[in-house]
Length: 323
Ligand SMILES: O=c1[nH]cnc2c1ncn2[C@@H]1O[C@H](CO)[C@@H](O)[C@H]1O
Figure 1: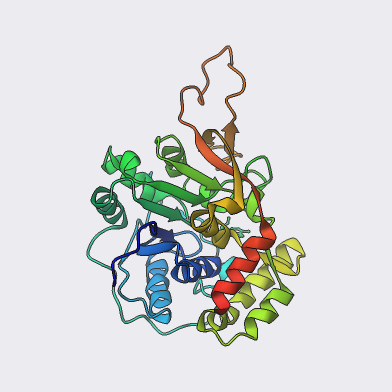
Figure 2: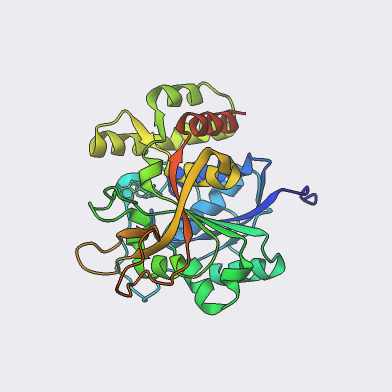
């Protein structure tokens, strides 16, 4: 591929495709502001093996088999194998029960954490990781390489439910619930982090009317998305009684592509790792100096998205998919 123009952000997408992951990946591939230098895979919406297969398939659909796929962890950071995988949201195959043929490509011979570390070392301060699933691979990279948190440019992550209910249960958002220990490692790592939680992504809805508009487009990305979106719409109708779907992953991707469409606050985030509130994300805004030393004391600040220009996000997603 031609050398990237100056100012183009290099991104690695850590992903568990996933219907809204597919949309976010296509959006990135259609966005001149970013250059996708790799995909790394993780369990979440599906198990990791299927996430890898789907990532390869999506790149084949997009005619971008030049982009490497590195397979990620099959277990949580604490080696847990009882993973919470949500086939009722995305279909058993993760892509709307379409049973696509197996991809021809293969993942590279390097693990996701090793690939993340390699790229962060190769382009210090220049690589953005857009993390769309549980944060196991990122936490492993942080543990394996003490300089990873410093070398990585930014981590934009879809995760958390800041001062609102979760979507796995009232306490927890799905990606953080998927590996709360990993999430706590990432939030306290000192890396430059922007967390986009469901307090923000629940404002960004793709409606039935938007889907009809996508369906009328001849663009291959719009066509592919319309093929797989049915299951995701059915799930939202059932779970939320809404005539539309939340654009979780695409909104996080937009926060990396066009940061001006979100506003943020800052503070230290800790994650509850056990008990009935396992997966809860709690931001300390650093306004009060507590008399006691707390679990948030002296922890680094991260950015947490608080508002989003939802109409602009939906418009941009639609335009780029239909183009
Ligand atoms: O109700 C749900 N349970 C579990 N996962 C969900 C649900 N809705 C969406 N997602 C998936 O989890 C991430 C956002 O939390 C998104 O990747 C989305 O596809």
